[in-house]
Image 1 (cartoon, one colour):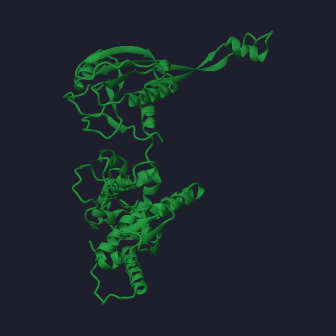
Image 2 (cartoon, rainbow, N blue to C red):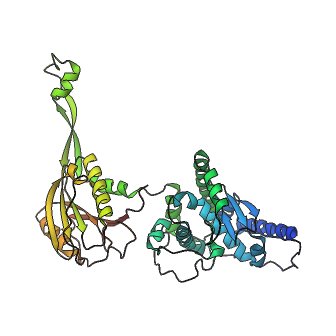
Image 3 (cartoon, rainbow, N blue to C red):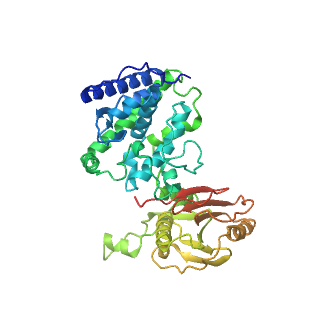
Length: 420
């Protein structure tokens, strides 16, 4: 698979304006090479509006698709590095890095998105070098989202100043960037987001037409990563609703209208005797069990928010009662509660010891052996001891309030993340 060739060196100009033009020509040449040899990235890079600026350390992407580049940094870099860096920032734009950041810490998010796109560049043999001054001890599968990396990074995680593509480096004023982001809010932002989705689809079409010049044998996760950008993953509550929806079988019934409904028709006569109205009958297909890790890893605010969302979704799905189990190293509480009151009534927390996932799951597995089906929603940070195996009648959804301390050997994992 071809890599960007080294271009013959020529004496650099001394005039600042000439140096800016030379840097712009070098970027133009890099875009031509990407279009010819890495068409997936070339289609994306073609949409960026390049502007020379000595106010940035290297390259700086803005929400209005402007790419500020420092002329000296471009001239000092080797041509293959300029091609790779241009592909790097193009992925930032195409995958909606600035729009998806929301209220996350900008520098930590910048590093998280760098780590998320790095495997895509590596698959195309476009190495970009380190983006952080120190080692980043992360081991996610290729294709993992920036949101997943963000949860694993330390709170002070940040790229090197020269790699602050999406944010201002430490100590920078940031007023220009803030003004740019404010000017690009609202309808224009929606239009740009749609435009990049169309470009991303066009880039894949161009890649297929070229016979796979960018990636060769394209890994399956590349398709999944881009598809996730075209159709972003749903909020964690949507995954929760999918799990709870599987517990309820809803049918239609024909019922006599209530007295209150009858009064709306005619206060004196009411409804005729033969009138019936459609109703909603919910037949439970299993039981909902909420398990709270009360070892101290979940704050009171996170607990209240979790229970409120679970109660809301369960009520919407017609689930009238839930079984609430609290456990640290042992089962500390096991009770059945009314769903409607779960999100409003305070729950006394029992435990605050170590973490062992075996007691509650083995308890439910023994009950499941008698023929009952359970969906288990387990709030924890995944730092504990797991059972060796899971009973087939148990479906477990692990809800992690922040970044996970470990990995789950079974079930599905969702992160509560931000409120938005």
